[in-house]
Length: 438
Image (cartoon, rainbow, N blue to C red):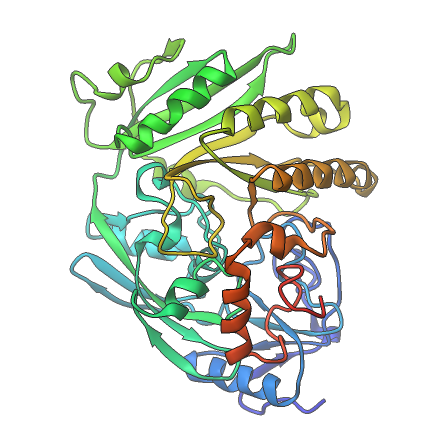
């Protein structure tokens, strides 16, 4: 195939071996596949030319940022990968906002804002992820408990659609609302303006503990509904004798603890730790995420009305499966406010939802083959029960996933996609069942 002369092209013989840069895999490590080429545009105009070229050639392709998925969403076996990481500029820092290219990492954004005593309204937990990649899947961040999914902070957006058009979008545009959370199926997020807030560098937090899943699930929504704690993240774990415990780190960004902390009155945990003050961003910044293990992650998003029952059933399945239990030291828990402005983002029709994050880690490929059927069973049952599945999860092997995940909005998404990508070339197959040909 001929390639555009003004775009960097990497062919298979030059693919890097470093796992975090290898286009034949993603962070999860489960799905592997060799693209015929990787195209790396250097700016927005180059990205538009790249997508226009691929449309003219009728060549399917996958968009790739930092590659932190678990289901091969950025792997294009026999296709083309469009690598967006060269679009990484910090364009402007204004009053209450920052504009960056989609390939910029949250680390770059956080570092720039920290210089002026500000932070994004919602910061991704993995600073190595790209801003555009996170927003493409809806994503959750450190303050989602009260501020919602990461897409909730987007003020303006430049989207390069699969027809090669550069579209400047705002909240009143349908493409703005549909592209944020659509897993890149409507194009590449080239530039984005995010809301920022002035916050101290330190987080003042406590550890809260529940010994009963039902009690935690009943009380957790209060944090979001009453905006008790800007930061509210938990884990479900097990004592050596198999007893289940929920621990939550709850706090606010402040210089020091506040007397008469309101959340301790509204919530009734079984245990309350002493307040701690720490520079959490510095700790995240120092964290290095390894690519040496297999991580077949699964994210469940449940309405709070029955999140407790979902969590109890999941806990029973984990305890009944030694292989899963051994690979899963804990389950992440994050209640968050939903945002109805974004109809295809992964969130239920509920003011508050509970994200349940399963992140197994295993060293041997053989262990993956044992875990995948169980994780897929969990996901399928969850979908049947009205739970949504995070779009960076493992491949579920469900040809009707789009219908079960999106319901009535699927027709609208298909209509928007048909207008700008009639052949379904961009991120084909990332949302199984979105394109009629699969």
